[in-house]
Amino acid sequence: MERRDLLKSLVSLPVVGAFGFEWFRKRNHEKYLTENIRNELNISTDTPEYKPVSKDDKLIRIGLIGYGIRGKDLAKAAGFAHPTMIDEWKKGALENKDDDRYEHFLEQDSLNLQIAGVCDIFDTYGRMAQEAGANALRQGTDGKLNQLPKRYLTHQELLADPTIDAVIIAAPDHWHGPISIAAAKAGKHIYCEKPMTWTVEETYEVRKAIKENNVVFQLGHQGRQNESYLKAKEIIAKGVLGKVNLIEVTTNRNDPNGAWVYPIHPDASPQTIDWNQFIGQAPPHEFSLERFFRWRCWWDYSTGLSGDLLTHEYDAMNQIFGLGIPHSAASSGGIYYFKDGRTVPDVLQTVFEYRDLDLSMVYSATLASNLSRGRKIMGHDAYMELDNSVTVYADRGSTRYKEKMDNGIIDPELPIYTYTPGIKNVDAITSPTSQYFAGRGLMYSYRSGRRIDTTHLHIREWLDAIRFGTKTSCNIDVAFEEAMTAHMGTKAYKENRHVYWDPVKEIIV
Image (cartoon, rainbow, N blue to C red; front, side):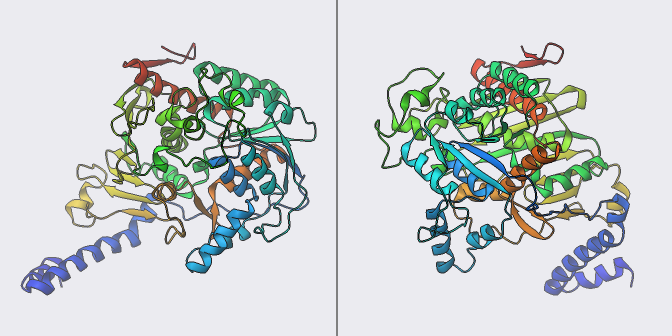
């Protein structure tokens, strides 16, 4: 039966016809994709492999600097969860059979490292960091701990310890640069949480220290390990989208944790916190529990939305396109919802122009709405929606796909390509902020059919570079691009003007 005759027959049956037409439309579209488009587009079906760390690999002794929210996650990804965290996971598994956090943690490979020293200026966190570092057996509070790693009261003392090979830095933003510089000069390899620096000036100094002292540097953009980003890069490189001219990336969150209004620990006081050390090179301020635990809300210690969340989105696109530092940046926004004394905006829009690439990247964020807007990459022939999966739709004005759309082979309302790396759901991800990161692919990816923590993969890559001289994906050159891009967005916001990058002098003007 000819297609038009079948459609006439289906239309004559009001209910069945509507259902049948929809079925036929999708079947025809999917049949073409199955038989032709994957071969035509030449998109590979390869997936990254994962080989466990050999027990014969050199033991690396780590110093952990900072055990706040991100410090706990980094320690866990390295294989060292605090016993109370294990208790929480075990309880969750008893209450919900789908809560497999503990199961996945036990399956996480050993990286053959030792947490040899810890440093946190809050006594409770310092003690917890020691207990996590001693929990190599991955047991709860009823289990056995190994010998506690040494606690240092300052990062300078930790860096002076010759038995420590490398450091993981999870301090507040205003300490990233100074600690990285000191660590490099001490000959320690560095994994530094993003963003790389708090100020423009520090950015040059960190790069100089890393290169002069020949240490391995990895910036903490664990999205570099996201399987979907690797597939998106391949698709775009093969011209599936045609000429890309606009990228839209977004951050939407709507809960106190997502807006950095973190809980204040009951143990915290001037007696348990080294306030002067927290302040460091930041402007002096009287003791404040809000500022200590919610430091991301103030420019005095924070890089705001640009450094905290825009950098994730930028780094994803830089990984895919090799964007580099933009030609110019313009920003707008303000403090529109959280009237809690913060100085950083809770709404931000930034436009980056890449003149050499003939494209713009637009970042838009709000911390007071959960509307999911995702990431969109727009080309002349197709557009891509990118989160923890990849979906590509033909554009109605496409040149490449016009004939197939005219012939009804491609339906622009249906995707011409989809890729989801083995994920069925976001198991045991309960908070809105956790769901945000899971959906972005910033919590898990897949290797050899296994779901693996992306931060674990990112730390593993850094350790491999230390052991075998390989290159990290978020090395100092990439980190320099990230830092300068974020600083351009911040400078444009603060000064309410366009700012520009001079690639010859390497300065923001």
